Image 1 (cartoon, rainbow, N blue to C red):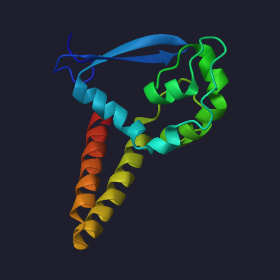
Image 2 (tube, one colour; image 1 turned 90 degrees about the vertical axis):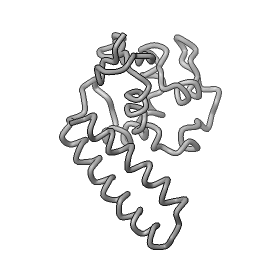
Image 3 (tube, rainbow, N blue to C red; image 1 turned 120 degrees about the horizontal axis):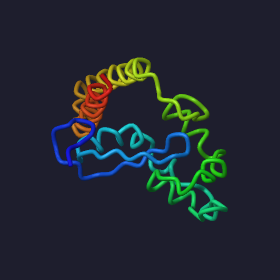
Image 4 (cartoon, one colour; image 1 turned 180 degrees about the vertical axis):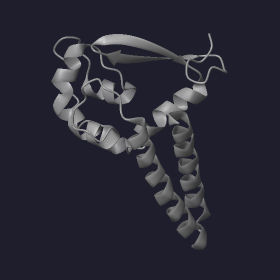
Length: 154
């Protein structure tokens, strides 16, 4: 099967996206999956770990820790049950405090990505001037990832 995103490589990863409480599958190659996942990976890992590991969905028994590890909800009830824990995540990832199933406006998201890239380029320049090359390499890699996301959005 060919990647549904780029249409070039073999799709080896299945993304399950819920739209109006119905699962929809997207078959993508490893590179496209990496690009799609980058925005989520920018959140520091320690912030993703829930404080209380005993929190579970009453319907499917999925734990909050499992969700934050895999980013897959077990059932529609998970969304309602874990909503207090999602609010901060929604605000940081999609710049809204709730999710109504609608898509993010690509133009505004692209503008947001451009501002991130500009900040990172300034940071990269400062690091190279200070000759902190290890940190500069990390920032350069982030810039490349965001540029890939920007290309994918366009």
